[in-house]
Amino acid sequence: MTTSTLIQTIVVLGIVAVALVYVLRRVIKTSRGNGDCGCGCGKNCKCKNHH
Image (cartoon, rainbow, N blue to C red; front, side, top):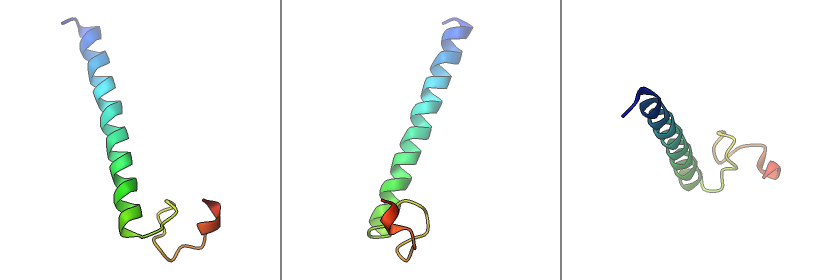
């Protein structure tokens, strides 16, 4: 494996990992905050109409 291939693999794995973490956090937030719009304020957030 050449260095550039290794760097490309690391970058791709990093992007995939970040995307997975982002999706998982959104799923956990919405399931826990029942109807949280995703702004991070929880269920008593004032920006539900920004859906």
